[in-house]
Length: 309
Image 1 (spheres, rainbow, N blue to C red):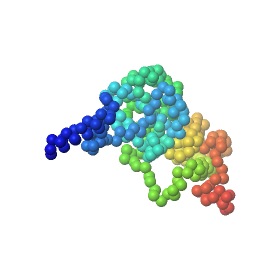
Image 2: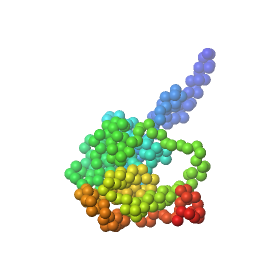
Image 3: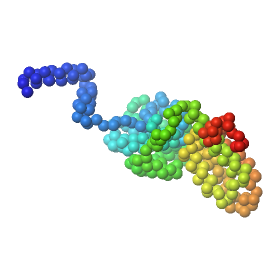
Image 4: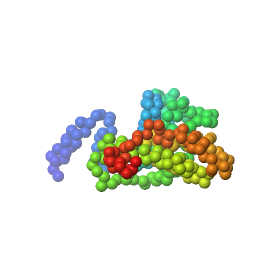
């Protein structure tokens, strides 16, 4: 190649480099991209700070939340981030494999804006992970709070161990390799908000109706106690409706208070159940205002319910 050609190539490269901001990393990124050295840097965990912490956790439809308190200068935190993101991929974002169950977030305690927020949770090491209902995070946490609804995750050092810890809490069996189910035969209007809402209404009504049938036919007895609890746990962890998850959780929380093991073991209890059923009717498995009469997908059009009522 002639000296003229080399001179033209050098000038072209200088012109390209001069168009980048001095001191930026854009040039390095361009070189990496050209050499095929780019990597997927997508973050799934939601970054929180003192200004949006309460709002985001209050408004999330997720049943549970995890907050990771870290410091960006911490080597252990940087090493842990890929593990945390592997799990966050399952639960966060529009392409989440298991949406609406766990909101995974993080707070950088090295930022001055978050100093008081991290103190509120008595953060004493990095990374430090908390688990609990999203609405319970606003009160903070300290080690002397015996009745706190928040729990420190003490066995989440790797992605596998963190996901195993989550599975134990909600009775699930999720895996890091889980993929989002895609059905190519679904209709093109599957993203229509109206149809999605009506489909959820169908599931809510079906759930409430099933609970009504269980009560009306006095199917709750000592021999079915364990199965009933497992059924409620499945609803809390997997039901697509937030209010059905919430209603099922309220029943579980109060279950042992109203129906202790000694009551369930009583032979009389299996015969005299009206009082027990009356207590359970005070709880609404999907809320007091569960939609009725939709059945758009379960039974066809809402106007075509002949033979079903």
